[in-house]
Image (tube, rainbow, N blue to C red):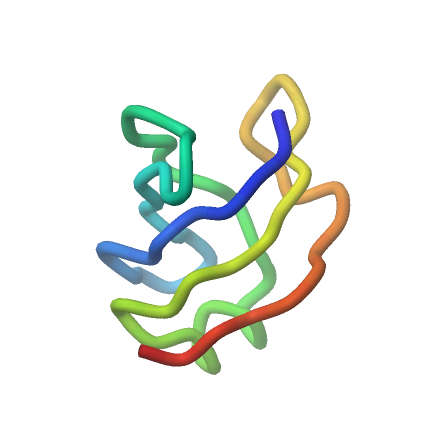
Length: 65
């Protein structure tokens, strides 16, 4: 799955995302590194490609709120 997602919740090594710009529903939790989860902010919109187990495969643009 790929597209734009809004960050709705953050925990260490996990992001909760909701669809944005045409993608419906929520995707959660997505496994990320500690570095990524510590830098992200709730409300950011991120262009992602996600694999079957909700792991980040590729990241594009990030838009702060």
